Length: 121
Image (cartoon, rainbow, N blue to C red; front, side, top):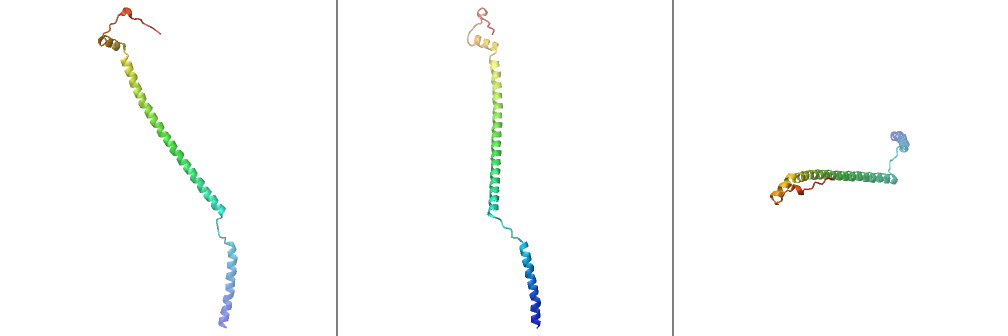
């Protein structure tokens, strides 16, 4: 009798445990990702990657253009210095005293004031 009593006592507890498990089971939902959600996540990742690539490409092109601008500005500055130096040479070489000296000394010319005409614009 003692075995029967033990079985009888254990049996109602098992039934109650099973009922509690059945009551808890519907409350717990298994989270699953659908194909549509996977597709949306994949689309978002691709869009993000394209946007990042586009931004990096723009930064690279802006950097390249800025580098070219700085190089051109440096070249312009150097050419301006060369032009200023040449302008000074033109002023020095076109001095009337220098031209008169070269004409008389090297070319054997003489200055005849009677044949000189002054033209003004």
